[in-house]
Length: 519
Image (cartoon, rainbow, N blue to C red; front, side):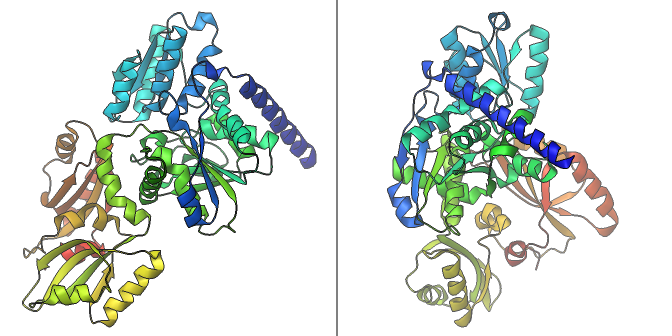
């Protein structure tokens, strides 16, 4: 019985694959989309010991692959479903693709977008002729509003990824890829809702089953990995907002049905690794990829750390609709992602010439940042960034050299609290005795978001520390300290839970203890 069931499942997968192959081959996407370049990244190839190629979907008229799926869906819609227009929810790129596709076909389009969407994407959608309605703080809020609009105004809902025709349109990227390079060993594809990965994987595996197809997710939005673990699509409790183009809580059902048969592996990458990949793309092409667009190249860098070398690897640059002000955050974090900066807390003697002697122990390495605060008559704490070239091994070696020279050293290179907040607010430890607890918060960034956060936080507990940075990204970061005595702790944590914000306690974080904790 089990064997018969397996044969039936295999047959179903084969039928699914053949159907998608036909749809991809017949997709009329080139009425509006263009065949994009496959660019060899020669410098990166030499550094990583593999031949790296970049599929340039930033070259599309809307600077994203999403145009392909949107146009294929509209081109296949019966005329009766176009009379009242179409509606969609999108964080940006699907919206731009649908707006252009609808304009090309003479169909009215209404797009619901979260209020956190970067201005560049909102402005572009309006410029392309679609009506934009800004609703809610997340894609899910916008999606619910688009569903209600479709019902009330008799519009046809166009899903950004979980649709057969959309998946087939995205699959045309793989058709071009195989025409451009016949000897690829692996293809890395970014994953949000899964439309691009599903379309590309099903095409590649039909024609070249030997090519490894690897999905790539931001580690704080890994809805595909969660579905693989559960065996079915499942909701994430929350998603990160840095790579807003892939900030999806639940993988699509149609996309997952394809991916589970045709995807070989899933890799997750963090924000620092994405920032490093954005820099790599810029240095090779002079194009600024958006965070979601650079996901797959970040995964290639990770893959090459343990691969055999000498392979032909392709990454899809899926989009380049970057909010310019986000570059502040990216430029700060890319050297950490490349493992070219070490961040240390070092205790030095409080005496003349100490800083000069400390610099001499660095053996000529450059200092990227130096923060100093008087601690007492005998010592001082410094927060220092040091440029390195040899990654983790050199960082460990440097720490050993400083320790051998008599310094007390703590490595904060992988400490999020240190990188997001402490480096910007090193100012000494409080001398006032309070029952201080430290928390890090993240919330969607929009005009008035900080005020709304403070209003929600309320005035129930005394705030002992507060740091906020607006670095132009889609999310705000706050570090806050509260005076919470033991008898009030239960009420305090109940209040935190009711706030509805993502939070993490950092009271035991070594960076806090080194620079900010009461003395």
